[in-house]
Image 1 (cartoon, rainbow, N blue to C red):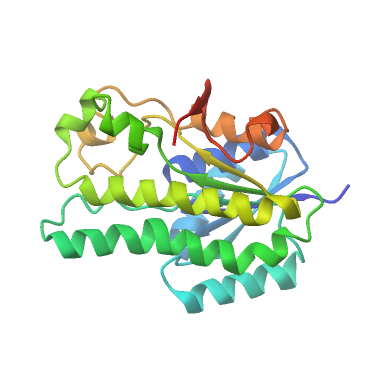
Image 2: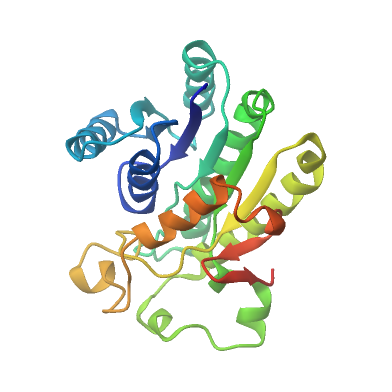
Length: 252
């Protein structure tokens, strides 16, 4: 059986690393490509995964989602060494919470969180279309859906976050990017999902223990990674093209 090739951006830490661990623990059929701006950090992640005795296999790929040349080189590498891609997971993201200047903060978030996935998806799409069962997964967040922000109060942990506006706008835009991909390429067989992973331990909110732990409310990212495994096992195919979480679907 041909391996299921999975490329994860921002895979050297956090949710990206957790997804890689869960997949290669689950099946020898998964080959996970750890994509990261830093080759050294990607290598450290690979070493950590291999120390756990995975069933599946792992390789690394240097990829800066904001750099068109880097994206083209990465696409060429995957084409040459694998020939096709079954799963693309747009996970890389930044918060830019420490940037006080409004223009700089919005440019920072939109470049990585929206333009990056748009360019990466476009570049790798021809390799996805070579798969018999292609998946395109965007890591978003239900907390940035319009109804939840316009009508409902946001979760209480957001009270601790300053300068979060650009991140929220970027994730709302990412939702629209995914909707358009589902509309345009779903008929060609690409199964598009947006995953709302919930609040998990991450450096995205800051490097202090309080911030990483979501002020005591964050969960282990492997819980969200299990949702990705469920998607790839076909268990969520009835919800294709939607914003999903571990227990169901959110409104856009």
